[in-house]
Image: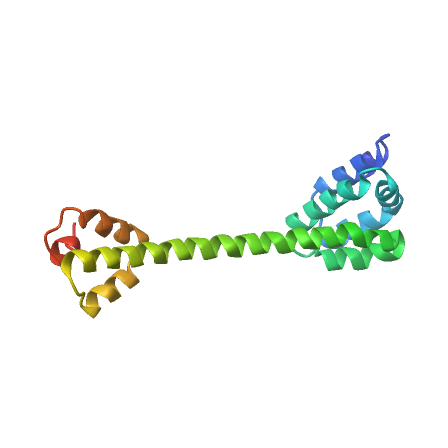
Length: 166
C-alpha cells in the first residue's frame, strides 16, 4: 500500500488501485478507513458518487464478506452520511443482478416447459390420445431428448418410432 500512497495520484486513482489490490476483508476495510480523505474528495467531485459507486461495487463483487451494509457501517462514521447514497446504488445493482439471474432462470424453465407442452400437443395431434406413461416420459426428459423427439415426430409413423432408442 505504501507504493500507492507514495505516488502523486488523484484520489479516485488511489481508491481504484486500493480496491484492485487483493487483501483480506479486515485489511481492506482498514485501508479504506485510512483513505477516508480520498473517499470524501471523490464523493464531492463532479461525477464522484458514480465513480465511488463503481469502486465499491467492485469491492463487493470480488469479496463476499464486504457487503454494502458492512461497507456502509464501516465507512459512515469516518466519511459521513454521504456514503449512503453510493452504497444504496450498489445495493440496488446487487438486487437487480439477483433479480436478473432469477428472471433468466425462470425464462429458461418456461422455455423448457413450453417445448415439452408443444411436443405433447404435436404427439397428440399426430397419434391421438396419449398414455399417461408417454406424458410422464416427456415431462421427465431433458431438453436434448425433447428436441430429438420433436424432430422425429416429423417422420415417425408411430409413438414407438418417436421414442425409439437411437
